[in-house]
Image (cartoon, rainbow over all chains, first blue to last red; front, side, top):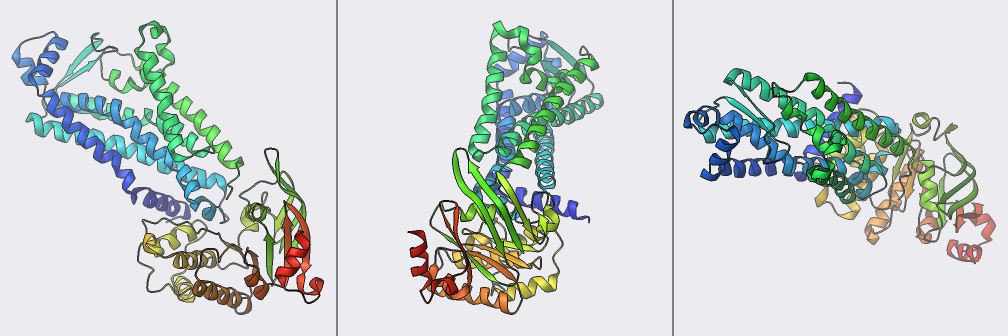
Length: 287
Length: 232
């Protein structure tokens, strides 16, 4: 194994040996179970019938099973917790080592700062993929178990709870493919959250401050998106583009629209990373 | 071995180190002394390339620490006042992780170093269960693992009990005598520095007020008397 891979493995050992890293995984499963119970309440079933504008029981029996419930569960889990856990772990990844003093121990070694920065960011990126894939997989498994089968996929997406934007339906096989593609896309675009938290982590601030600063940016963004007066600015908002994984499952969404969102988010992530690399390379690590 | 030329460091408007010229010769135990906030840790930070000087150059083994970091720090080990480790990992895993930032540790050398610092019976325990003295010895082990020529010790005896101080002093002396290391020792404990160092640098508010052989310059004074006379 090359030294770089060995160092990356060590970064992952450090990351995944901490209990805090698993908070996201445990919290996500707990949230999924809560949502899956909520989806089964009569009031929720009625609401879905209303959303689909088809009140016949067959639709619910055919479509409101594992796949659809999993897609809804992932949406709400990430809305509530995904960003929080990414901000928590990626905001910690450099700042916690600086706070604990281990960064000074590492930087007493003849390792270049850029190599160390790269290792840290790769660890953050791997965590992002791991968390999203874990949530995608556990949502599907739990939803299938709770609903008694995979069923077909009904993709429901609305800008506003009362405003139905679209609904596309897929057979089980095609639905699984759409779901897998959606989760992969979510994992890619969530890197913008990780990159922002990582940027704050590389600045001279405490780990908790890095997490709170990241969440503040995303909450502000989400609040602006919810205010009707600012609808014209949707195209600039992170929360709008982060939902591209869901929109991409609709047959009405053009691939170019999804590509625009992905490029926008990855460009922002690249800017965050460039600034973080610059700061990490030039900052003092004081006692 | 270590050469600082015209080194200054400002943190905002505060000058932490001012126009410092210092040479640490090879093969010695060299003391870096000064009151709290005198700039000792900042100087060590600059020697290790962790703190960028505002002006001046810092070189180790003939290499500029900031331009040729890899070569300059290739044979350098360091420990700090509060040794920081990953408490949730074992001592062995910690040693491996720190060492592998530069090279894969030789298992035979790892065992030799661990025996040298008397940690062989505790290496597989989590570092969170270690006493301060054990952490300090683990820090010494991680500094020695990459086969250094220069060892930088920033307050290595701070917080140790008398037995720990005694043990650390003996380890430092053995490292110079048996291993031939050059050691830069920053400490508040003048009685310990007196027993270990002949060459010292005294810092006061970021300025160098003395560098050289304190025994010759002090004319029979103890290091404490010499220090107090200089800083007044």
